[in-house]
Image (cartoon, rainbow, N blue to C red):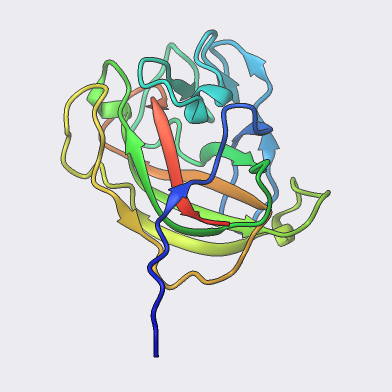
Length: 189
């Protein structure tokens, strides 16, 4: 019997369609976060959803969630994230790693969920998604700014998906938003 070792690769490309979301829970409908601003469901101007997968560690995605720039709490910015359709086609997610933003460690996501979907439409509908991962982001210990967190695995996942939805469920401290420089989804096609 022979075993073939398959190397994991990055599942997303910088040109992949990515959509910011807020006020969204696992299995729930996605609320679009489409406006740059400093109000509820806004992403910060110049810190847009596509920066979460642009392969540039010096850019970042920041989302205020249910709050604004003038308020902060331990949960503000939670239940935000994105969904993405990797252009390379169906893939199996096996691991992921985050890169922290340039400032404010209390905005780091410390717990996340990842869901997968094989639909080509209705991606804002919660029933379109199947849970793949729920747990630590790999940033439980602050690695510093613009730094890689600890790689986390989804080793039990064997399903090929067309789309992935990532949500922050907890962050390091009381702040106005959640932010991260990069989200690297790893697996194979």
